[in-house]
Amino acid sequence: MAETARRSDVTDAEPDGAGGVADVADVDSFREAVIRWAAGGPGDRARELAAQAPVRTAVLLEGLSDAAAVNALAACRGRNLAAEGVCVVPMGGAMSVGRFAELLGPPGLGLRLTGLCDEAEHRFYARGLERSGAAGQRFFVCAADLEDELIRALGVERVEELIRAEGDSRALQTFLRQPAQRGRAPQQQLRRFLGTKKGRKIHYGRVLVEALAPHATPAPLDALLAHL
Image 1: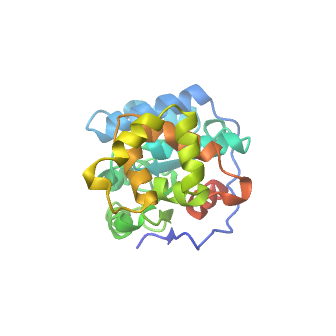
Image 2 (image 1 turned 90 degrees about the vertical axis):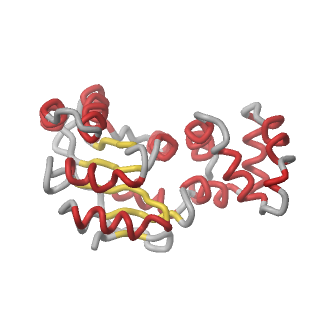
């Protein structure tokens, strides 16, 4: 069973020491090569770049919005993850975790693995990591998803302020008038709104994180960054 940490389980682990500064462009190229490899392409380029960068840790995330949030928090704290040899990998869906773990973890390139997963997918992640030979890697669990964590951390009023500041107030009001939104809690409405337009979740992944007070970072996200 893979080791995971829930919202209340904030790790005490210290970040691993990097064996030098990685080339940021190489880490970005490595990410793209890994995504092609996981989709069925050749793995030679990913293997070459893993050693060349060098990459020491892969952060497996469900999608691009999660990656935007993780990168934004790192930047807010003055960290450049790629330069530290940390590659943030959006997998394109939780169902791909076993495939990426097999390629990048102990059975493959031997990288240290970590990441975020949703509560509903916790057991699926654990099984996928175990079946791919990557059990024991530490992942951090969000209650519903990362957007839900961020909305709860900021509060509904603050998120609505940010939506107005980003020029999406009219779109939000149109969305809230839909019959399907009647009776839903404001937090649930905002969470659904963020996913109604292509690219919106990615954009607000960064915006919401940048608006967080230092002490208000959701526990899974805070623990993930501390673990890197």
